[in-house]
View 1 (cartoon, rainbow, N blue to C red):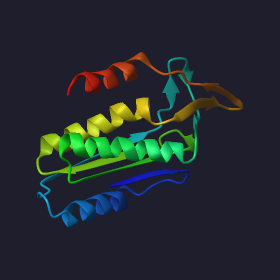
View 2: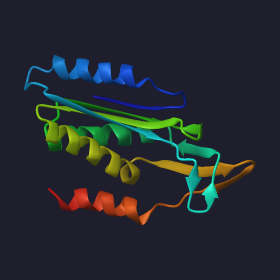
View 3: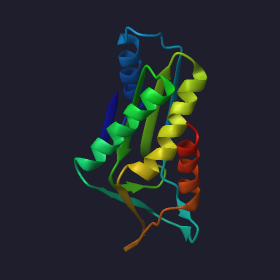
Length: 157
C-alpha cells in the first residue's frame, strides 16, 4: 500500500511496478488483476476555458486521510495491494493530477476498488482547488455529482 501527495509529476509505469511488486509479495491470495486510473486536468469548466488548477492541502492530514481511504479499499474489496498519488500545487491543462491502482485476485474487485478510491477521494481527502485563467483564480465548490458518487458507496455495504 502506498499514498503520496506531491507537487512533481509521476510516472505511471513506476507506480504500476510498485503496485505489482507489493501485490506479488503478499503471501495470502494471488493477484490476477490490476486496474489503474489516471486523471488529467481538464482545460475547461462550466464558464469556459481555463489555464489549469491549483490545489492546496494540509500536510500530514491529507496523506493520513489518503492512507486511511486506501486501507478501507483494501479491506472492503479484499485487494492484494492498492496505491494512490495526488498532486498539489499549480497544475496546467492536460497534466496528470491523480493516479490510483488496485490489485486483486479477480478483476471485478480491482475495478470496484479503483472506482471506490476515486469516488471517495473527493469526499474524504482534504484538498482545496482553485481554477485559474491568466492572473485570475476562483475557488471550486464541491459538486453534487461527487457527493452522489460517494453516497452510493456509503449506502452499499
